[in-house]
Length: 317
Image 1 (cartoon, rainbow, N blue to C red):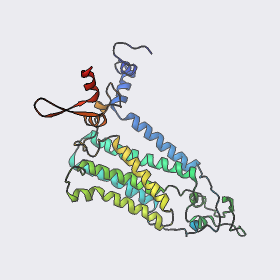
Image 2: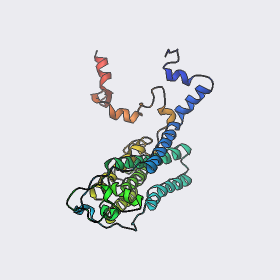
Image 3: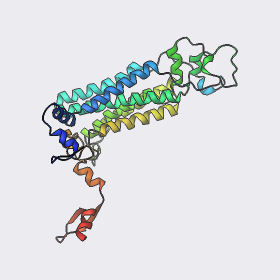
Image 4: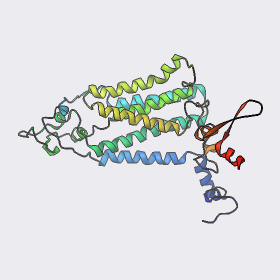
């Protein structure tokens, strides 16, 4: 594509007059791409719920790890996990926004980061669940094997007599734990947000702020532990699910906010500044200073000054 004096092809489009240029400028300065991708994630998750069955691993009736009873009443049902890890963090952020009035941009990116973390976690968790097809600890109680099934050989899921297909199919969705990943995604994101807003990682932060910031993680851990108590998952399911959720929560948070050790960790990135001529790969000044090698030089006045290594090499040449 030929270039004109305005620069790269993308910059050429941005400077156009008319609908195409206006749309390109809106796309660059807004979070339209994030909302579009979020919509595709939601549609993908819904398709998985409706059309995808898990892989059915073979099992044997004498396997003690899948002989636990089926808990009819869960300690934390799916609906309540959505309330605890999704709705409550959302309401807390809304209350924070109403009281402190941080501005539309900060409120928008904070809520967007939470929703992205929850939706991405749900999508990836269900993809992995269906692909792995690991039996739950209560599989035999769900399956209700037919009479005469041998107990010392591997059998297929077709020996099951359970008529409720939802209960039966869920028996092969053990790894990783969805409650664990969802709770650590939403409540973990809320914990990171608290840490950033209260500068928890600055030196000598008071204990009260630390306890408040990490309280959501305790709640997420209790939700994950409840899956062990209900015999829905084993410790590996819960551990991997919790790790997955926390990693996605951190990933989503860091897309909009600086590192927690930054002096400006409570201020989100400015979209207009990031989406400049250099694109979205441009780092802020603090991250540039961290990511590039530094050398120490002694100035004539005895004060230390820091200069980039490549700049020193250029001056020497």
